[in-house]
Length: 338
Image (cartoon, rainbow, N blue to C red; front, side, top):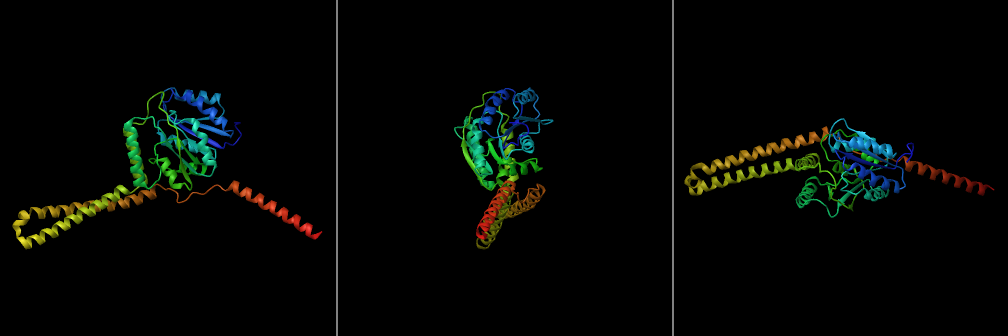
């Protein structure tokens, strides 16, 4: 692709200490990009690597005009690296990919095909996952919990191979949220999302950068960034505990009247009822405060209430159609006059 050509496809890849995979990644990726026969760019974002990753990325950029390298001053995390790539992307179809080659680059044309067919968000579902039994089961559980809590109907939240329209990618890049989950946030803005199955491979070189702690933090970002379910659960628990305390107190009062004070174990049960009432009231208050905090957080995040679609191409086509129609009408009028 010539440097002046405006790319149709932008492939964004965050890279962190992947010196063992960079050369293989580029060797597989560049032929795939060129075979699509579309103007394309590959944006490799170095996330503050301390090994030879940046050196290898720059060498790949010198050898391949499609490659653009961006380097973060330090390790800001995958989220920041992806957003930096979105900010630099110029294509109308933006595809994200991990550098570890567990998602084959050969799947990219299928993502682009879905985007060019009119979908503004293309999610992927990993088939025959080459991960450990524990990781597959944990991922399945996390996906189910996230769907239930957030209402976001994605089957696989953890696959990095995804496609975004330019409008959504630029909207995400403009957000100042430091802790969020990009695919879930994109789903909030998507009009026509779709998920397709893709292949999955085992990592050949290096070690995964996703520890159990990072996976837990990711789940926490999902839960706190897209759902108020935990706070509402706390609120509901408070209501139930307080109601149990009231019911227990009423039962004790009735039984004392019927059977005397000895039945209530000399007031011990009454203390339990009072304790239940106060504990429930505390949970209720915490849940209510949490509801207000959640609404405040929604305002502070400054997520746009809408996203405008780019109509420049459609407007041009419509104008050309109107001009053609005008020419036809003029020709018909000339024939009538003659």
